[in-house]
Length: 301
Ligand SMILES: Nc1ncnc2c1ncn2[C@@H]1O[C@H](COP(=O)(O)OP(=O)(O)OP(=O)(O)O)[C@@H](O)[C@H]1O
Ligand SMILES: [Mg+2]
Image (cartoon, rainbow, N blue to C red; front, side):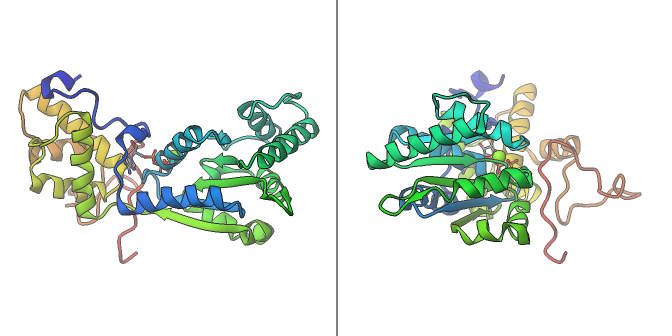
């Protein structure tokens, strides 16, 4: 809506995970390098965890681009609220297995065949599961069993990446998942940005959208955006998108603190140290909007 007003080629603060807008913070860079290394090392499970909205799916999308460029076969399961039957169907569909997708036995045979064929050609195969914290126990058990597929000469045949919110780490600590936990060879995690990263992140997205030397967000406002977003990229995007929209509506070239105040009220954002309205916040959990990512606990909590 405001793209022409600011001269953007595309919306700089889109909410969808888009590798074209990747900002390579140290931790995102490291996470992606770990995922790629994990795939090539062929040793077992890789876990990527992180708070809501910190960039896990974005990392997986970057990995997807990498795998496609390297012609590495992969299945990408992004909806984790599935039964075991649906799980095997999705794998069969993604890997284009020539068998009845409804029969677990047939899928397992076809999968095994594909894995060995790929391994014989010096290639590996990857299973990526996003939102893995939502997986049912029986699906996790099937995933563990798939992790057993190996060949003494060729190593692990299927590299499995589980990505999810911190509940995933807690889930993997459960006694019944001890075997799976032991097979995790690599763990990486994403945290919210530090202030300097928030600043570079905002500039990087604006630059990629066509504004190399941005003047819309003054440094003091960026510091305030960091505080209120708590450094969570998804919240930063939502705030910045709203600020650009407000600027456009008011025909202003620079965003202001007043605009930010109003947007945070509309988003019902909460952040550590925010001034409390008289009479307290709404309800036991505060006035948190459903679109806002869950704020991190205060340091003393
Ligand atoms: N390093 C990054 N570079 C560019 N954009 C990023 C980065 N990290 C996160 N984002 C942006 O932040 C938003 C949230 O990212 P993403 O969906 O990947 O988070 P997530 O950790 O998967 O969240 P959830 O826990 O809800 O699944 C997206 O708009 C994404 O484009
Ligand atoms: Mg995600």
